[in-house]
Amino acid sequence: MHVSAFDYELPPELIAQEPLPQRDASRMLIVDRAKQSWTDSHFRELPQQLQAGDLLVINNTRVFPARLIGRREPSGGRVEILLVRQLEPDLWEALIKPGRRLREGDEVSFDQAQLTAQIIDQPGNELRQLRLQSQKSLNSVLEEFGEMPLPPYISRPAGSSTSDRERYQTLFAKARGAIAAPTAGLHFTPDVVDQIAARGARLAEITLHVGYGTFEPVRVADSEQHQVSAERYEIDNAAAQRINETKAHRGRVIAVGTTTTRALESAVNDQGLLDSIQGSASLTIVPGCKFRVVDALLTNFHLPRSSLLMLVSAFAGHELILDAYRHAVASGYRFYSYGDCMLVI
Image (cartoon, rainbow, N blue to C red; front, side, top):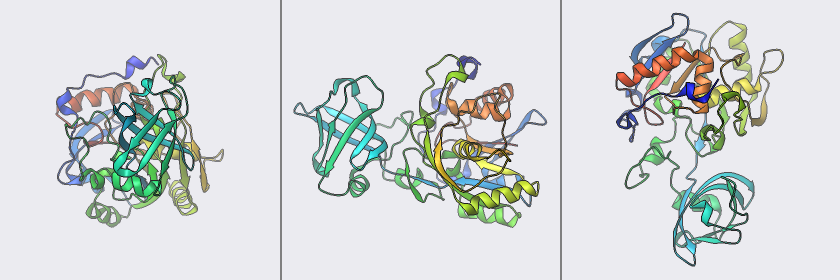
């Protein structure tokens, strides 16, 4: 399909700039694939949509403060670095602004953090390579001086705040390694989890470290020509066993987020089962793909022409999802990372 088929109009004021005071106060649009319809609801009513034997699969990745603000030596010009992927202990791929002005051998300093970055490649690639040097461990430097890597559409004059360190993490965040939150999980609270258990539904946790592949722009005209960059994931034996048991007993596997969906559909074997696995998820899901594990999907609203919107359209149907998105816009739903959510059943 042409990428333009995944476009829609979104007024800027519907892009959520701050999280709601209460995580579970989000609205939730319930999209029914069988009935080709939708219903307005709230996330707090998610447990009422579940049945005994259902399994919600959560991504437990933890976002690390991957954004650094420094200055170019010797000019002093401002440089913003978003660490994307660690290649070696001190070697990283990163998004850099202004990346085109920095050449091989140029240095960026972060005086307060006692950290320097040396560019080791020439301009040309969107992801640049740099070598970091610090008198302290990089993890401790990032925790003290790094900023949470909020998406660019969250455009606050002061940038990220201290509250983002908590609100841009899910309740389940454990495994450090993501540069963006698995946003469908941001709505959960301990009370909602308790209600889910009371309904006889269960949870399973997997890990996919959200990286550049999740938000990389689609630069081709044909959606089938886009290739999502690989992201590290892990499904342990306990999670695999719980998912397989659910499928065997005809319960529903409900993926919490597109990242969870991509991990599960990447990991399924030829027999339709999951084994414990560590690997790189490079599966690109577009309309026409067959889903072998996921039976329902909880997800936030995604950017036009994005690979995430393509994935949701593949799961629910292109026309149904675009019509549901238009309804969400007309009804004033809040969009993107800190916005409302959609449950596709």
